[in-house]
Length: 203
Image 1 (spheres, helix red, strand yellow):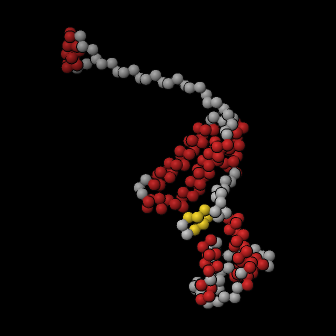
Image 2 (cartoon, one colour; image 1 turned 60 degrees about the vertical axis):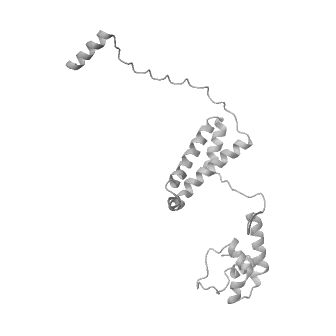
Image 3 (cartoon, helix red, strand yellow; image 1 turned 60 degrees about the horizontal axis):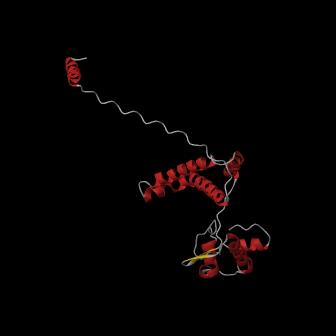
């Protein structure tokens, strides 16, 4: 102890000063009761499945949108990754309230299940209509068999075809014609003829 500290200590004893005591650390909260283990109802089950689909989709497709996120704003990419982290935390917390058998079901579903989003019926959005892919496939199939397989259009007639324009919008071909010309043979003609012959069409 230095002379200065000794003098201060003597003054404190003389005048009855006391050093302020450090506040006691708050007591740890008592653990609450264990959550009740019960099966989810229908709404809870749908939410769990959607959370799994959300996280799987974020993990699978977020690398493809990384650059767009960075262009959208300085925190968008971080927020996207945070969504995946938070959805996992929510899933894990909710699984703690469910019986082990149900937890195993969700784990198997998360690893091997596939969840498909569908619309309940036709929905008009401005100049477009959202329809079921099954119904849309039936319309395209009928168009290819009934019209495209018999088509003899050439040149500018191909580019002016309203049916081709619609098909390009709802079912664009995976490969455009090799020539790359606007007025080359229609991309759907050969596919339609393959369909009529019972072959697997290549569009």
